Image (cartoon, rainbow, N blue to C red; front, side, top):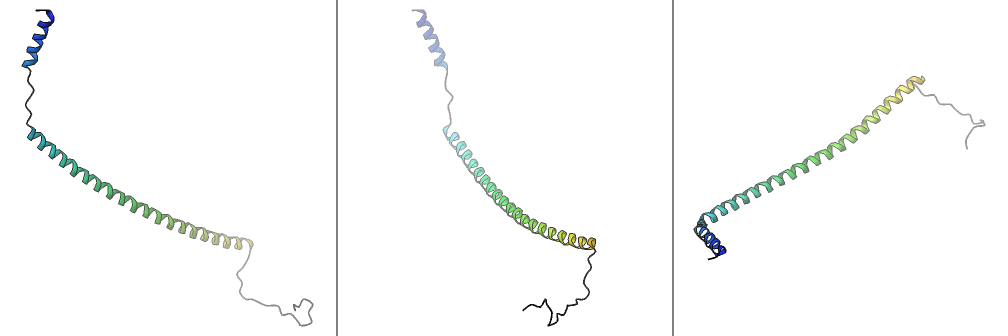
Length: 116
């Protein structure tokens, strides 16, 4: 025999002594079913959390919108109040006084400034 044939026969003996492990397919299928069921439950749970989070975000955005509108109204009122305070301070600065009584000027019939 040649060297190649001897090497082949010795390799064949070593391979022949190697056995594949016996797999219990029933246990593999049951384990796969439980893994699939647990992943499905986890998926439903996570989708539920995601949906709840989306509703919470929507509520917060609505609250932010309402508070922004309220803030604009309050800023407008504040600006109007400051404007009125500024006007009263300016009138006091210029020496204006509040009117106590009103006197009207009577125009005579023979007057030159009489309107028709």
